[in-house]
Length: 125
Image (cartoon, rainbow, N blue to C red):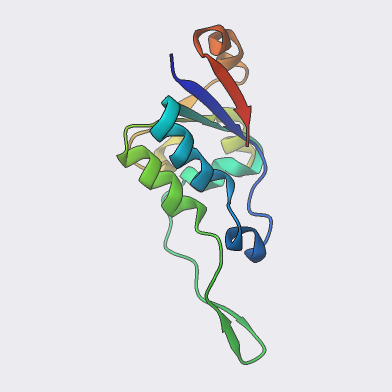
């Protein structure tokens, strides 16, 4: 049985990626255990089709080491990870399922709670 990773919190700062961000950890979990990902809360924005963000400039310095959660999520998708978002959280951001990246599925709130017994592990990343 695969594992389920639930991600609810969105981007928390550029320094996080300097160590080990949640979705990058998901790649390793998938390699070892198999993985599905459920995005809730502000993290549903990771699954939305959008242009890459502009470079971050602080004063005269361009910050090069910043998190790229959408890229990591798409890498997980390409590795065969199932990716779902909860529809009410997507709606709360003013978005609909048509804005989701290819291969990302939308589910009703709480639908995954009934699926938890089919997973060996549930992680909150």
